Image 1: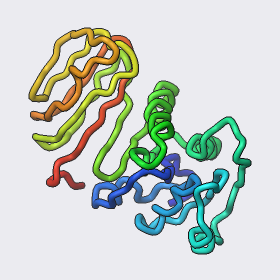
Image 2: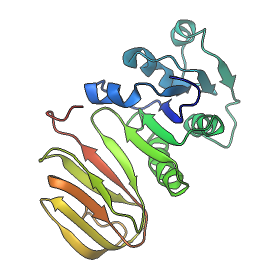
Image 3: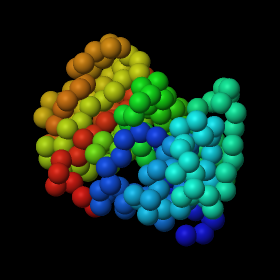
Length: 219
C-alpha cells in the first residue's frame, strides 16, 4: 500500500463480526479510527494512520494499547459526530472509496442513522461507500442508475428508502417490481431474497440497499 491509495476504511463504534469477506474488504486500504471504533483495529489486524474524535467513549486500556497512533482530538461540544470527522479526514487525504466498518448497531441509533444517510450523500458526490458490520452490508443507490449485485441466491436484501421512490424496478429477486412508485415509509421493499443477479433502479428518490449475506457468502 502507498499513500496514493484512495480507498479508506473508517472504523466506527457499532457492531462488528470479523469474516473472511470483511477482511478482504479492508485489505490494502488506509485506515482511520473514529473514537471507540479503534477497538476494531486489533480484530481486523489493521493499524490506523489517524485516531480522531472527542474520545468520550475511549477507556484507558484502549488508549494505552494504541498510544503510538497519531491522534486528532476534538472537544465534546462540536457540530459533527466522530464518524463524520473521520470521514472528513479521509476525504482530505484523497479518499474516493470508503468502507465504513462498524456502521450498524451500537448504543447510538442516531449515529447509525447518520451513517446510512451520510453514505447516500457521499455517493451522490461521487464517493463510493460500503457500510458493513461483517454480517450486514449497505450500499447507496443512486437515482437514474441501475445497480447490480452478485449475491448468492437466498441472500436477504432490503431497499431502505429515505424518501418516496419513483419508478422502482427490482429484478433478480424473489419479488420483482417494474416501474413501481413506492411511498415514503412503505415496507414493500423490505425482506426480499436474491434470485440470480440482483438489479435495482429507480427514477427519483434516495435509497440504500441493505444485504444480509447468507452463511455461504465469502470472498
